[in-house]
Amino acid sequence: MYFVNHNLIASEENRFKGRSWQRYVDIHCHCLPAVDDGPATMADALALCRALVDDNVMHVIATPHQLGRFNDCNEAAQIREAVSCLNEELRCNGVDLTVAPGGDIRVDERICQLLAADKILTLADCGKHILLELPHEVFIDIEPLLVELAAGGVRVIISHPERHSIIAKKPRILLKWLLEYSVHLQVTAASLLGGFGPLAQSAAWQFLSSGWASLVATDSHDLQSRRPEMKAAFERISVRLGRTIARLVCIENPTRVLRGQDIQTISFVSTGKYSNETVPSIP
Image (cartoon, rainbow, N blue to C red):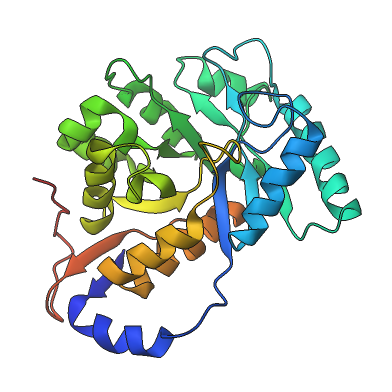
């Protein structure tokens, strides 16, 4: 558990003031060409990757959609090959970005057997974390899937819960998943900036400020409506919650995912004292 004392934030801000060396790791990005609703061509993919570099991203996990409406395509071997081709194009074109394979996986009761059959991917292909997308129209309790994945040593990251209208309005329905199955939440950088509307923005800040969310990612698809905004999100988080938190959710925890390591969670405290039994709360 990663504890932050608000009394230390002022001095911590002074220590980081003026530094601009932050290089981000993006664990959720649709940057592969012609595989889903991301870039249509390699030229488009290279343009998006250049925008990621301009946004101070140095490593990205490519997460094309798997399952759901992409049920019959984007299998693991295809994604690995697409990642290899994109990395070669990046090298040849002098784009200072490295890409690892992964998937943005729609919740499905077959996930564990598909992982075992090497049809879908964990993040960075490390076998440690899986990025799950809930259906947008309804809320379903995925506890049986969480039990099965935990038994196989796979940790779950829920992608952009703030953009799920039911969760955004009733976030406490996630509490059991967080406490009993160590589920992690990833919020979208653009949500924090208002790019997905006021409900998603409010929910995203609630998840971060309460310590429920451990990761921020771009979920970028293109240079029009879904461009990367990590730099702006990092600065906004720094102002509201301090740079310690900004670095944790934009750099340190994403790096842990990239390396297949445990994610650090956050519990905010207002004094130097805290209890290990403290439960993060959202109204």
